[in-house]
Image (tube, rainbow, N blue to C red; front, top):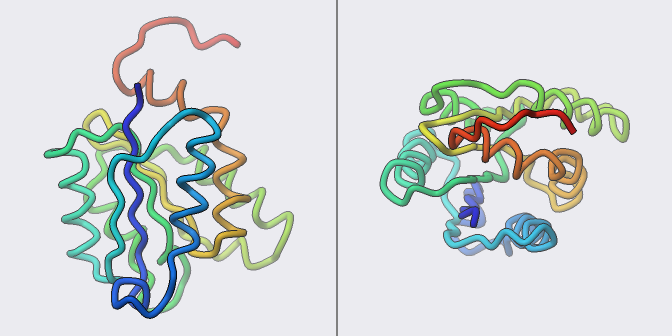
Length: 162
């Protein structure tokens, strides 16, 4: 069984001023592939808060898959990728590149995403944009590879041939 955690990064959401539709969209998409989120938080756009929550989810709670939503753009408060880079040990650039390529095919704004995908210990961390539509578009394109990726991170030695 794969454990999952969702972290919504939003100043307004963390203050209760905005409903978190993106986190709910992630939860729904994960359930479609039989992965249930066991952890869920809404936190402000603060690098140290994001960093601490990611470390907690991996190091203390041992969650296999952590998906963040929000803070992946170029605004001054968009620091989710920076916090993620602070805590990961290895990047998985193919996933981030695939999400950007798919997103840019739908809107030129997709090319300004700074989303990162990476590994800390035996956990996969994925940054997604903050809108429900962008969550759907970005996560949908990598969903088929999630189980296999997590199995490999955890040490599965079987061949990768499909």
